[in-house]
Length: 172
Image (cartoon, rainbow, N blue to C red; front, side):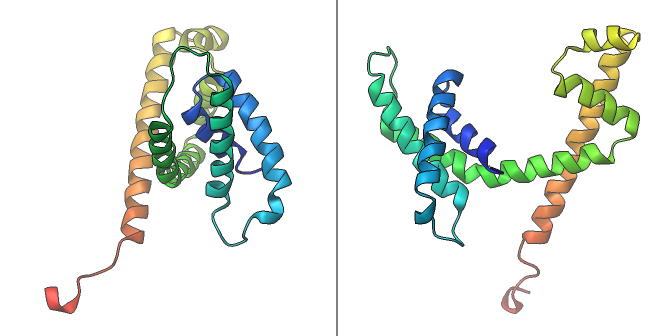
């Protein structure tokens, strides 16, 4: 359950139409549940589940051969593998974003959540809040810049913490 979003995004890499991706996702979930006993504990569940979803996406594409534009399996494999390789970085960035949002002052956090969780424009939000549109736009811009800087600092800190420490004796 906790990896559904990552699997769905992987499918979207292969099938950019949302309706197609949703259909394949449902089918892939059924197969993943059916094959759950074949998963080797201690291995990467997301990679295993995404591989199943990828096969389902290929099967779906084969059934839709009457579409005008087709991508060959090699291209889709390359895209899917790149997506999987980047998924850990994307997850780290998402974790950093969550942490950075939690560090915002309450008013800023509330403003940014209203704007993006409800997916409304700055204009609509300004009207609801009874504030000038320009003021809301500038506040959101400032908060986004602050979040971007916080994420960059967090990612740099993580990179420093996971990098090998010190040079070997022979190099010093």
